[in-house]
Length: 474
Ligand code: BG6
Image 1 (spheres, rainbow, N blue to C red):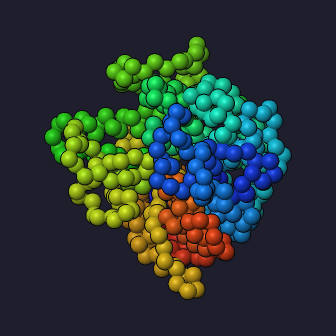
Image 2 (cartoon, protein in one colour; image 1 turned 90 degrees about the vertical axis):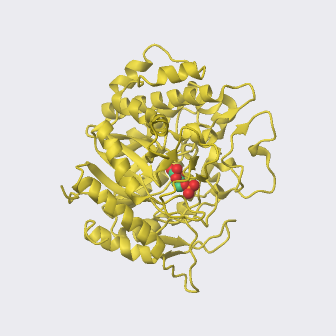
Image 3 (cartoon, helix red, strand yellow; image 1 turned 180 degrees about the vertical axis):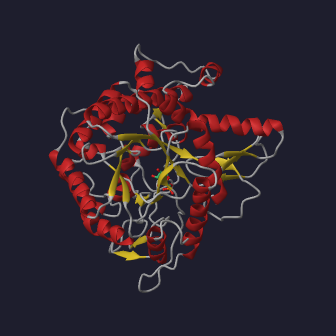
């Protein structure tokens, strides 16, 4: 099996990391807007301590982003010239519903996203919309407790239905939530969750997860009723967890770790809570509130494809004491001694992509969609702003080889490949502009200074050839 002629080649971004235009045209504040660029941004937010919302004199990177709201026409044209035929972007919920609990959306917000769709259509680029990418109105955090509140399900479904009725006829691929499993690792970013010392943190996270799963299923239900042929995907931060050794205890620990990542997609694909979760809930004294009918809704509204991000594999052991750890996407993992040293960059494991694709396809047997992958690293432009990013080309080409092997040798069905941050954007974990993923360089620094002009990197020309050759020239 070869990559099909209609394989989707593209890139992905999110609203919070690119748009800027902070509070313009009535936009409300989002959870991401209150995260300063400092090393506390990934820590849990405790309501009874000095908290993240009150820090003075900090830089808030989402307030500028890359000024995508100003530059989107030029950006889409540059991406089109590179040859992409798919583009994933997210809608900012508070740009449409500033507080999140209003009945109707701001027309200014809808018009902006309509105009993005017009640009994509002009260039024959298939849109892929993420409805919620780490982005929820702060009012819902402060007045309702974020996704821990069941009321937020109703507000979200109203928001999602607004999008589906306005854009459903123009957009085939929808991702209701970005990386739902992140609510377990970065709960403020993934679910707008804050904690008190008295909280059973895990219980709160799984309560929020239940609400997001329900909101996802209700969105699928609404979309399928409104628009024939529309497709929905779950989206998870994927990456197989390896056992540190082949000791059975370590292998079992890796299996356990995978289950917690895959819990979300298990529910979204199979429409029911997996058997392993009840004993886990009992062990951790997790009692989540559900209502009659919830499980029926989950059962009847499953997803059509499994989309995922892949940056690296993970690694664990039955006892991790004394083992060196590394930071990866949203959490710490045991350092894999077989992977090359990667400095401050997340561990690099191209074969891990093939392994992860096999893992997901074996488990779910529905098409996969890679909607994020890439190398986040500082670039050093020369005086003419040329970036010779051979390290990025090497990373991407090794991952694409493994992606092709998964399709061609292992028979995995794959809709497409969208690389993350196809244009530089601010990083979630560090809040820095200098952690760059793009084919296009944006002249801005970590504090939002710069001309914000766009420049093609060496990888831009490389990816153009990859797309032209449908993945033959890597
Ligand atoms: C994923 C997110 O978790 O990882 C993206 O969906 C994020 O929004 C990406 O940017 C890379 O992480 P970081 O921390 O390098 O931005």
